[in-house]
Structure formats: structure tokens, C-alpha cells
Image (cartoon, rainbow, N blue to C red):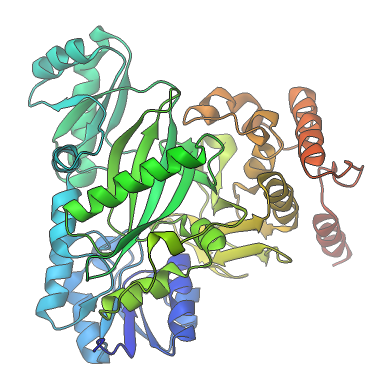
Length: 500
């Protein structure tokens, strides 16, 4: 008999806590929120049935406090905890603590987290399971790293073993640059992760970052839910994701999916998880890491499969079987997600905290905005500045691009800087529209993507080409209105502001 889950604590904040709460509500499950002192008026608190303060402003004083969260779980009488992503979501000790407290953890087992938590250990485990990995080595000194690099061949990438989010990473092109890069990578790894272990890998030139979503139950059933292309990145952090990948044909996706399932089975995995791969220009792919949690970009997978991944995670935690096999999983259409951040692209994507004065989110056919903000709320400097995940679905990639352009033109946020104008410039880039991009795309196009938002020069030409390409692919003719740099929604808002 499945375990009953009637009340769930969401050990997170912001847009992911709101998103999880919505599914729990649909399942008839009572929602318990936790919040820091400065999050008292946050949206995730407002949408919950119950909410409890767990400490001060910093994550260390609140959302990373296992004792405070489990104390609330006990006081509120919850059956389970959903960790969202970030904070404690991949902390094996937290899973153990939940189990000891008699509270279900809605996610993978601690044993799988431990096997995959260290990038070096994960590499070894996956290699033993037949998963292809980038040639590399773990080294203790700069001298050892230099010898390994000579064998592997430059350029090489230095990576923090316990790292993520682009921290503790250094690309090294030349032998003479390695000692300094080694020390900087170790220092950053120690600062952010408390572990200065660094390993070295062969740098794959102009790779795509393609990941495979897996889902498994506690009875040994595991499937993959196709791929997501996450190659549009700034500072090694994703900002746009899409599926299908323009660079991965069906047979390649099937091979990557089969390898991901094979790797997940090797560590006894269940719940939702993601295998991240580097895809080389020749079609070879290499294991990067496995994220043992729900991903920020999960909405695009939900769009094309029709599955609710949070619902599936709850069902799996209850002990239910998947109820479907790989042959039953089908994909439909194309989906793209833009991460809307409170940050200023023109200053190198620096955070832009502050109070949102006005907020109007897009809607209409095939548009989804997973947000965690509202007009009047404060975007804090203490946490990740992600405001929302804007995603679209359409029958084809070209139509999805056109729909995302329309949605972005309707998105209005005032009071703080956001990266919405950056997304608009990206979707006006002809190379992106053609699917010709890799993980270095933003660095190569900084001149046009991070410039002043008004059309001029090369950007005007790129925009005209991009509109023509999309229009051709969608059998539509570009019009003066579709090429406008200011949408009617923004014009209307500006006019109302002037009147007031």
C-alpha cells in the first residue's frame, strides 16, 4: 500500500516553492512554508496553508538549517518534505535526518546522493558503469596537474570536485598559465564548497551542454524523458534552455537517454534526476555530472511530455510505481525557457536587488510563467536573484521562438533591472534562431547581446534576418508590428505612467 502523504513542508523559497505548492494543492495536500526574517511577505509564504519563520536573513541562518526545518516539520505534523532545488536538495545528511525524524524525503535516496555528490567520485562511478567521461585526472598538486595536462593535451579545464554553478572552474589554454589557475581554482573551491579538491579535464572545444531528464520509482523502473539543450550560459550558469536540442538528432538522444538510465541504475537511483553531458561537434558526448534533484529548467520537459514532475516525485515518494514504460513516453512539439533574473546584463549580469514597482507577466496560448514575485515585493540581495522561469510551447521550434518573442514583449518589470532585454536581443540573433550556438555563444556575442537595448547597426541587421528566418519557418510574413522594438503592451504601460 502506498504511504499516505497529506501534509508537505517545502524546504525552499521563491519561485520553486510556489511551483511545488501549486502541484501539492492540486493533489489535495496541505502546504507548509518556511521563511527567513526578510521573507515574511514573500509569495511562497502567501500561497501556503501554514508558514513558519526559521531564522535570519542569510541562508546559513535559515534555509540551510536542518534543525530548524525539522523542528517545524515536527511542530506542523507534516508527512514529507520537498526540498525544491538548491539549499538542502542534494544534501545526503539532510535526507538521513528526515528519515531519522520519520519524515519522508521527496527525492532520491541519500546513498545515490553520496555516490554522485563529488564530481570525481561520480566520474569514477559512471566510468565503471559504462558512461563515457571526458579524459581527466584528480591531482593533489599543481605539479601533478601540469603533468596530467601535458598527457591530456591543452586546453584543459580545472573544476572543483564538490562544485557547481560555475564556481571553482578555470579554462587553461597554455602550460605557463596552469599553476596560477590551479591555485585560484582551489581557493575558490575552498571558499564556496569547503573542499579544495580540484580535478583536471580535457577541454572540449565549442561543446553543447545537453542534459537528459531521468525518472525512476523505488521498484527498479527507470525511464528518460528526453533531452534539454542548456548551452546558452553566462559565467557557466544556464539562462536559456530548450527541447528538442537543435544539435541532437533522435538517434543520438536515444543513445544518450539509454546511457543516462544505465548510469542511474548503477547507483540505485529513484525520483527525478538529470544527467548532464558535454556534446562535442563530432557527436561524441561525455558525462559531466548528475544533479540529484529537480532542475530549474524542468518546465520544458513537462511541456513536451505532458508529465508533472513534482507530482511524479510525490507519487514515487509514496512508493507508487511509475505506471508507464519507456515505450509509453512520447514527446510533442518544442519548448523553450528563459530565466528571468533581477540582474543587469550591461554590467556583467550583476544582481539588481530592490523593490518591484510594477509587474505584468505574459499569458496567452502556450505561455507559462513560474514566478515567485509580485508588485511591491522586495528582491533580496541575500539569495539567488531568479524572479521567474518563463517558458513557452509550440508545435515547432520556429513557432516557439516566435511565441517567446511575443511573451517577452509583454513582460513588464519596473523598479529593478532585469535581463528581459537581453533575452529579447538573444531571440533577435540570427545564429541563435538557426540553432547555431554552443556554451561560448554569449562570450562571442557580447557586443550585440549586452549592448544598449535600442536597435542599431549590426543588431538591427541581425534582428531583420532573425525575423525573416522565423517567418519563413512559420509560413508567416514579417510585419512592421512584429519587428517593433517596443511592444503594444509596453507602449500602453508607458502611456498610463505618463498620464498618472
